[in-house]
Image 1: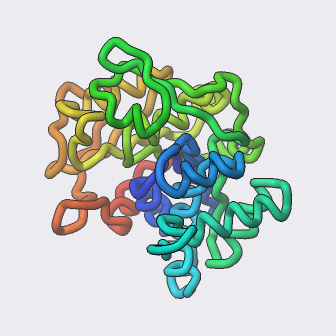
Image 2 (image 1 turned 90 degrees about the horizontal axis):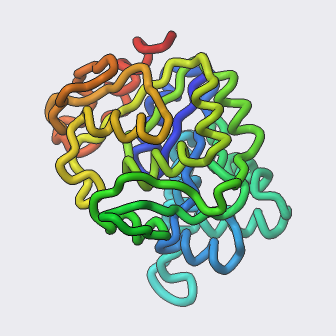
Length: 284
């Protein structure tokens, strides 16, 4: 069973924790357009893809007993390292020492015993660009606060993904997109032209896991149908969408829609065990 998970942030981590419960082979393809916080500082200073969401994915795939999990997530609170996550520093240091970002990620993943592959959506840093409220906006932080977004793209437009990302999509049995920020995480990956083409060509079942609530202002007023329509406007047709009845309303969804209890009891997050049960049934 080969599963590819696409997106970024905390939502993608939940999907990876779910996928490792039923898949033999898990690959995360992660947005690296983040230009804020620790990630933004490191990509500016060192010219590397933003490491923050990659770090979260390595932790999500890690041996749950590893002390490296807490170490990777530790954030410095004073001095020149204030605001940096230790895992981000490890990835950046390994990239500088080895001269190869893919090698650095693989080496970083061995520390917490990560099971699976984590790969950036592009081999180089990219800027996220959006059309929002009738104007062009650049930079992920600016985009996520820009208001109603009609579409996103990446700069440079010819940014290339690692070959491992395209190979994983070609070999996948299932591709899971989301949950997570629709435009600044999920579509930030889909907008990479070579990845979009690979997703259109794959025979794998494509599943979109919808967010539990609106993200203001990025998806204010969106129902499940609007999420699916946004994917379609970026040339991505999914086979099925999964949504929780306690979350955003369904609307007139244009694809197969699976309503399932996939949230934690308090309704704030996706529960990996519940999500795994649903995703397992949707393979093939």
